Image (cartoon, rainbow, N blue to C red; front, side):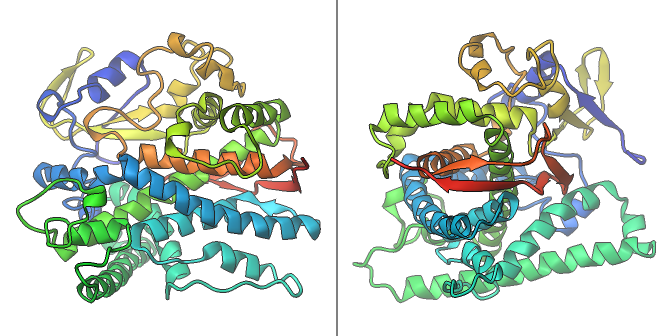
Length: 455
């Protein structure tokens, strides 16, 4: 890629060599990517989790981020998601009565933004409300959000995600000196600066709120509050992640919260959009999901959703896995070697990036029979026959996605409530959804009609 050598693999035995080791001391591929001046410039090379090459800092940040996979946090996420989805479905019923189609990509982007913003900071953006109001249905308006600049912030996060591939792949000399390219470079850097300024404002407001709250009064449970109070007298025992010598600095908090948004928005909402595309074309799968919900909860009328019941939803889980197998939001996962290493008969030099071609692996008929066919049953009846490391949608090993449990809970919550509330239809006869590449695969032009379920 330009002057930089990259390795691309799509064999499970090689995937195991890179993503298999579960401890720092056993892996030779702890870096996410090779060193990139561009990644450093947008604040990712030595901060946060995803691209952080400072392993000591990464390890501490990763321990903090483990909170989004523990039961108390996931239970709070279910409760919050319920509230957001209930409001959105009331809007959808209005669109149903108006005979209007639903742009799934826009709506799920809004749902994701509302869930992530409130979970991360305690501040509501109300993106779904703004989207509903933008449809300008006569006498149908709702309140606006309470986060000043909230919608602009979400748009900036999407642009920040887009900037990653550009900053990583385009050599610094080109980015800074070539006309037009240097303008794009400036746009991305200015956007990063604005995001950090906005997060600094939000964090300062939250710090004042915490300082003005009596010690006897509990604080609201969100990621930002936890980050600001860990290892202080206000440490939240409710979702504690352990103790450190000192609280996180404001700069550290900014980088972690920024990655909660960049990692939590595009992937989950895009995956759900792809899932619904396939469900609208496979009525039998939709009805099987509904039957499983009835078996687990005993009712389809506002079932009480608790975390402990989610493990029983094996078919819904299979639907999710099959959808992201056929069309993963991330087509490749990179890792970089920490030292020279012998690899399948070749010598890989230190700091060389190895890319796993997820799409090629997931569509290889050697590992998945009829790979282009949407068949959730393969993750039920044929699950044990799937070759190890032929399917790792959330990565694996030391740098596996820390948000995988949170993502699964969000997707299951939405799908349960969707299946219980509506029947869905689509006039699109194509076999695969349309999408564009923006560092992740973002779906476009997925439209459905809904009809409120009777009985």
